[in-house]
Image (cartoon, rainbow, N blue to C red):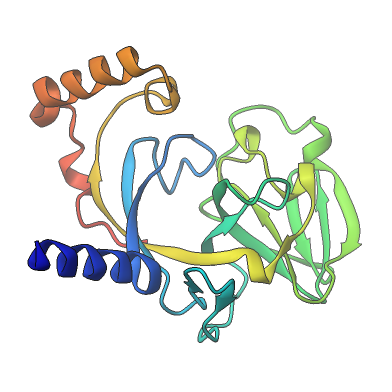
Length: 209
């Protein structure tokens, strides 16, 4: 019993202060991160929260443009999102016909995916200034991403970590990962057991992000 308690405390401590595993259920970062990628997240450098005290340790890492971050969704802090930082506090941001400009300079974004013509309102933003202590984030799959273009800035304090690498990737659609029905979940887990070797994307194992 004592060993089990110590193990539980160690696991809790690692998940809280060091890092944890997480699955990506949607395609907003496709091009870079796929649906079904299981990621190891680094939380230690981002001021992890201290359980029960409602406080955080000091942040040790500065967030830069181009970083991929995990953060609490500003409109519902119980949800966590994964996006790329496109602008930081003090930046003047503009999007013209799908092209990103920061402080009037065009930004090269080789990781961005466009699957449709650049005609949506998402492809025309600003110019707007990012407030101090805030971030403007977008998904790499620009045509299929709910991000700052839709719901605004992310407070820096909402950032909880960054993905380090893919430790496992399994090919299954978004609907299977997000389905909360117990029977459907059991059927999905059974299909994973049956198709583990054939549907695992082995080439992505260990891929750094």
